[in-house]
Image (cartoon, rainbow, N blue to C red; front, side, top):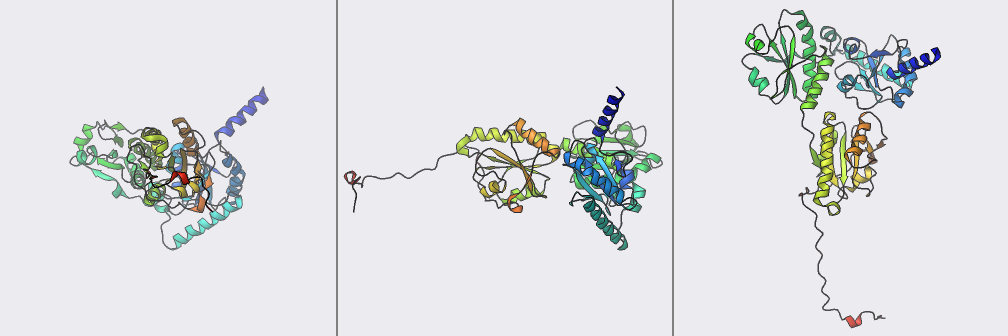
Amino acid sequence: MERTGAVACVLVLSVQGLYSPSDDVVDLSPSNFDREVMQSDSLWLVEFYAPWCGHCQRLVPDWKKAATALKGIVKVGAVDADQHKSLGGQYGVRGFPTIKIFGSNKNKPEDYQGGRSSQAIVDAAINALRSLVKDRMAGKSGGSDQSRQSGSGGGASKKDVVELTDDNFDQTVLNSDDVWMVEFFAPWCGHCKNLEPEWAAAATELKEQTKGKVRLGAVDATVHQVLASRYGIRGFPTIKVFRKGEDPEDYEGGRSRSDIVARALDLFSENAPPPELLEMLNEDVLKKTCEDHQLCIIAVLPHILDTGASGRNGYLEVMMKMAEKYKKKMWGWLWTEAGAQMELETSLGIGGFGYPAMAAINARKMKFALLKGSFSETGIHEFLRDLSVGRGSTAPVGGGALPKINAVEPWDGKDGELPVEDDIDLSDVELDDLGKDEL
C-alpha cells in the first residue's frame, strides 16, 4: 500500500508541472510573474508550456540544462500556461511550448525562434544579453529603473489613464461604446499610490492590445465627491467596470499590471462582436485578414451550382456560429468558392476536390492546418479546439508565401445559373451526306 501511495504522489506531481523546486528553472505564475520577471533587471527566458504537451515534455531536459548553464547570468523560467491561462493569454500564447525573451522592453518580449537543444537556447540567451548590454551602453532604457518603481516594463505612461471628473464622467464613460475600468482613489491612500504605476502600465498595454476598446480611468474621490457618492465608494482604491447599458460591477481581481490586463482582455473579448466573415474577393482581403490576425480560417465552399443558395448559406451559417464561439481568439474568417482561387487551393493541398474544405493559416510562420473531420459545428469545433491548444499537424504553405489571389465578383446571394449555350442551326446540313466517307 505504501508503494502504491508513493506512485500516486509522483503521478500527481507530474500532472501538476514539469519542473520541481530543485531545478534551476524558476516556476512562474500570475502571483510572482511581475515581481520575478517584470521588476527584474535580469534578462529572462520564459517557456510557456502545458504538462500534457509531448513537445514540452521532450524540451524539459534541455531547458533544465540551459538553466543550469546560464545560472547567475540569465534567468530561465517556466509557466504552466494550461493552469495559468490568463498569463499565457496575456502574451498571446496559442501553442506549446512557446518561448519568449524578456529583455530591454519587458512589455514587448521577443519570440524565441531557435532550436530546442540546450546549446541553441544558451546561444540565443547570450546573444540577447549582448543586445541588452549594447542598448544600455547606448543610453537606451532597459526598463530597470522604471520597473523597480512601477512594477512594470518601460513604456508605461500616466497620460494613457484618463482623468475623470464630475463634469466629464457621463459623456466620457457612460455614453461610450468602449469598456471602462475606473479607479476611485484618494491621494493620501498608500494602496492607491502602490496601484498607480500598475494602473498606468496596464493602461498603456491595453491601449495597444485592444486598439483603445478597453480604457482605464481614475477619479480623485476626495475632489469629485458627488461621483464617488453616486457609486457608493467607501474605501480606496475601489475599481469598477462600466459597460454601456449595464450596471457597473466591482473589480475583485489582483492589483498587478498582469492581473488588470488579463481581466481587461476578458472584458474586451466578451464585449467584442463576432468577427466578420468575408468573401475572398481580391488579394487585399486575404493579406489584411491573415496578416492582421494570429490565424485566419479559410473555407473553400462547393460551387454554387452544386449547392444552390440554401446549401451555401447553410455552410456560411456554420462558419458564423464558429466565429462567434471562438471570437475571444480574435481570428480572421474568410471563404471562397471552389475553383475561384486555384493557386490558394494548391498551396494548401486542397487540390481541387473534397469540398467543402477548411484551412487555418498562420501567416507569420507560413504554416497551415487542414480540417480532417466533417464540415459541421462539431467537426470544426474539434479542429479549432485542437489548434488553440497546440495540437494537430501543420505543414508549410506551398511556395512559402501567401498565394496570388484572383479578383472576383461577390456572390449575389442567389442560386447559380448554367451558362447559356448557343443554339446550333442544322438547317444547312444535308443529312444524306452524314456517314459517307470522303477521300
